[in-house]
Length: 468
Ligand code: GDP
Ligand code: ZN
Image 1 (cartoon, rainbow, N blue to C red):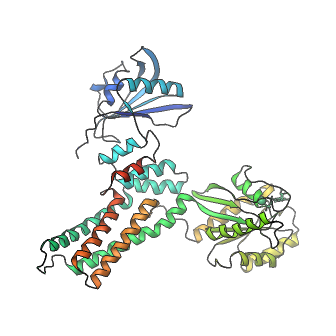
Image 2: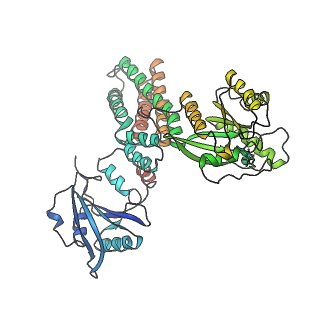
Image 3: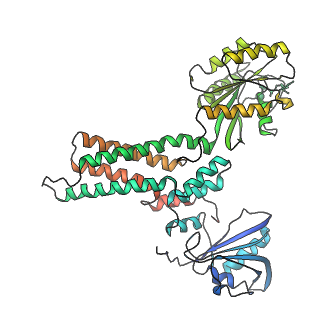
């Protein structure tokens, strides 16, 4: 594969700014080795092979000031991330030293890289396809084991390969249809309509499957939204704090204090949960602000993947608990619910026994004492069991679409594929079939980057941070 000969060499700090044990400054481009050499006198780097490490000191040639003691890693084109010559300088993690080093490299002719420019070069030089390049961004952002796995899978090629193969077959049919058009008036059919219909059905199946996976992908990427609802003073804020292990929600003994949503994420066993603390639910809200809060709580429950209904064991009867849950989920029959009885430290044996019965009948029940951090491990187990039971947790090995851009392109592709199939069914003219097929191919090509406009590339790569 030809390597694109970029005229300039880019440089950026590739590790996060600030104080750290190490800072890595990366260069990519035809002068990467030459520019580094100007600062590095110990060895002739130009004579060294790729994939080698070189220890030494760097000096600023403009004033001979000692910059840092470093390890220089050399990668030779095309065996590098960008497929250009790449040098990674690992030095000490101080902003001052890094700024001095960058300054010296810039004076030797390097240019400061734009956001995502290393990965953009990797894409333009054919090292990655677009879906893979985006996976790099996801991988950096991934903060649960599962989202990490999904991004990694996509980086390795993921569904791009599958789509590319099917698209290539469709391209053949499209070409035949275009050929028919070239013959104009003469009524010829080069493209076998039955074969086309079969292939369309297959591609459509894959596209729809990928679209369905987007829902699951979204859960993995954005977390399982778990709404904590219950009457005022049940201990919702205390529980949220305990789950988050920090004082984020306002805990107070005055009923109705949590007026807005407080939410945060916790990774449990590789799954990301987004917990939402809500205003207390009750029939006669004390004031207007709280009434709005209760209304919004109901809205949030509507968007939740899981409802955690919390109640005070010493205050409510099993019948009241059942009634509350029934009311909260009246329009959401499939919403998984976990009922959690709080303040077990204050409750009597008789109260607990009454609820034990309830749990045997219908409702999945946990007992905790949020303020004492009692029963929280069992609660986390129950949450995980609920999520797995509801099929919200993927195995991580399946192909999963996590990217909104991909989902949009798949949706458009699905629409046009359906249009071509329908066109075949009703015997629509070649011109219309070819046009719809072209649209479908464009949408599929946008995912892997076989078709990409400058705007699209810019919008994707500027989402990266500098140095990637
Ligand atoms: P919310 O209105 O549902 O958010 O309830 P809060 O979290 O603000 O708690 C209300 C009161 O109950 C506070 O005084 C908490 O300290 C107290 N509380 C919460 N959990 C427990 C618990 O497990 N045991 C006891 N004894 N008190 C608790
Ligand atoms: Zn609260």
